[in-house]
Length: 325
Image 1 (cartoon, rainbow, N blue to C red):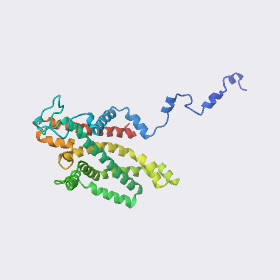
Image 2 (image 1 turned 180 degrees about the vertical axis):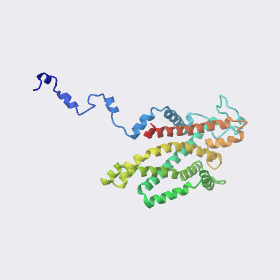
Image 3 (image 1 turned 60 degrees about the vertical axis):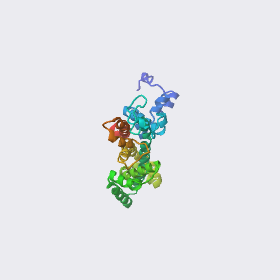
Image 4 (image 1 turned 30 degrees about the vertical axis):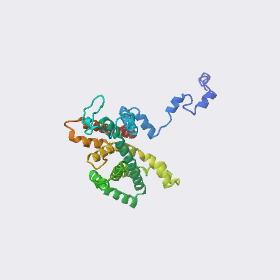
């Protein structure tokens, strides 16, 4: 027989308790329930990035350079193109923070305005490289077979071209001595040379990511449910293959800033009257002993910009890779 006293220990649940048994978060505050919502890859990456001082430092510098390139007149009222010969190689002072160059032009104004050409060339080159290389890699990885073989062999041909040599050939052909190209034409040729020589790297990266993703279970399930190739590529493959491209694209912006400065320094990239950090460094190399500030300030801005994008890419890589968290 059962103990009658034990029955009193069993309480009958109230209706409001029954209504909340199926909802674990029913009695929690709104903020707590929002925190318990599942996050995707980008959500987890952003949560991790917000905790990294390296991300905020690099982001602040990048934002500063972008504003400097878009609105240089907010930072200086000096003329970056015209100068006064009486101010030739005057050292830095309160009236000219970075001094004057050989032609009496304000070095501070030229350094500020030089960010525009470098940032524009780097950003447009990166966008073009990611679009062309990403599309080629997606097609090669998804289609496979002879399409993959053909596109991979074409990429191998471009891989065999040394970067500096290939850029010299392209730019001296269309922008050599005697040509009278405008500012935007020269910038377009530099962008064309960078995209032409660097898209195979992005193509290989995208191809390997697609090959590793297209045999996943959710891709096979979508194909079994009758999803077409376009839907699979746009809805499933592309979102899951973008992480490596975002990381490499961020680092590539810094690399392209250095590449543009290198080509301008060699005299085959941007040319005067275009204001660029590479042109300023090239003009200052003959006066490095007597006027080192002519080289120091544009080189410092160039190094800071390149390092900012590289550090941002490193922070994004660690945030998007769960193994590095």
